[in-house]
Length: 406
Figure 1: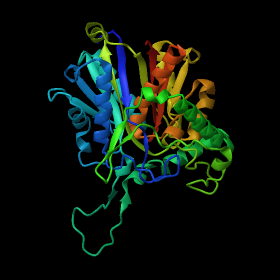
Figure 2: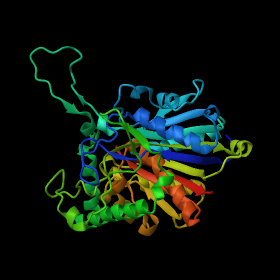
Figure 3: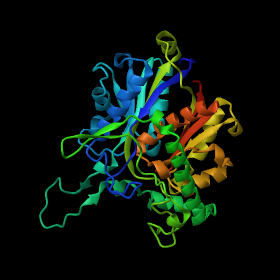
Figure 4: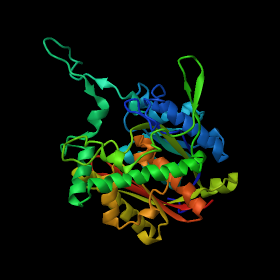
């Protein structure tokens, strides 16, 4: 295995669009990307990431892309179809990965590992998701039906339930709220922070560096360019959040306001070896330093970032205090706050431009977005070290340490 560095030389993402089942930040029906599959969204992000990188599609030696909830007929072909739609040559192999909410990070670290193994000099990685296209399914139909009622099952809702621990993902976050004494008001205040930091970042144009405008076909036959995330709420208030009822039980904590937004989108990164950077004179945005995944109890899945971050730091010989910025996925406010308490994080170093509560959480795309957002913000602040991490349904977490270089 090579000891040379692995570098991130570019990245791009589509806007994160409110899913079709909800309302966007200005109260209008969501679903801007309802007719664009995850495969197509992934291809849009990948094509732009390649264009920004300074390499040609023919230079890409492997593609590693994630898609957690496969919702389109071609989803089984995953990374391969994303690559081909993005103009990557037929000869270039592709691998589809999934670690649910940590998939974007998993794709990145898998790609970094392949470069270290000498499998390729330049690898495209990322994740894509379209929750709007999640179907309703009818089970037990394959063998034929006689006298029997058939039920439609919400494929997306079913995926949010872990039968091993018998809990919805939100209920595992409520477990953490009770265990760590995190009040509903604390959760709502953190959710408000996410929206306010996102509002500040949007006004400053910070996400423009990440986003590629994405064309949506209108019924009239014309195209509409979507250039911004649309889940965040500009007039979010603590009073408004407090009025929202807990979704799963009367004495619960999780509401639509303090949980991550359901969204469709994709994000791609281009990784390169030290040799490729030198020979092709590529600009290094950052270096992939170390990474790790870890398991935790399924009924407390939100704590996954804690052991994952600790293992990642240990492998790099770093201390938590040395990390300048963190991007930790905001699956639920309660989940993040429990991680913050357990690690002793300083909040002003975490999710400084908001997070998934405001921006939305298109499962597989989020991890790559965390890495891209992190590196760009480290560069703006002239800081060096950053960690991106996510909790994962089923009881896992993963994390990656990056060094900003640009």
